[in-house]
Image (cartoon, rainbow, N blue to C red; front, top):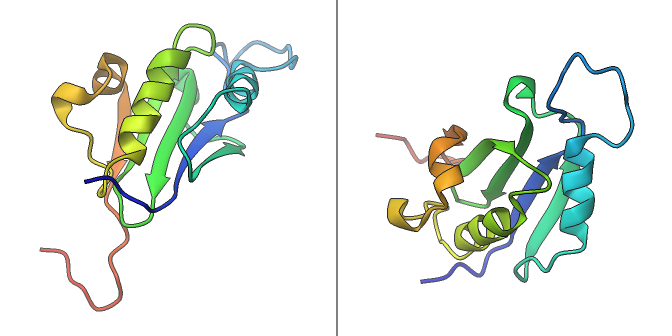
Length: 129
């Protein structure tokens, strides 16, 4: 069953591969964000640029989140090589109700580069087991 709820693809626009590099020309994270602006995302999925996801050692970082869904953070995204993988993964995430993409349906990059998985915020009064 597909979710009809909106979701977000967050892209760290300050990410760069070499944190010691002083050149502040468009960083790889900004390049990734700019390239995604030209792509067709699923209906009701919003692209959001954010300043620093605090994952500087893992290259470009993105996050997928949505209401009542698990949030996933992925690193080592290459702005030139991973566009198809990222779009496929974002679509798979968006089409879930709970944010959990079946392991065998996840892009390999998502399997190997998941930085964190964060549970959804529970409604007031609901306790986590």
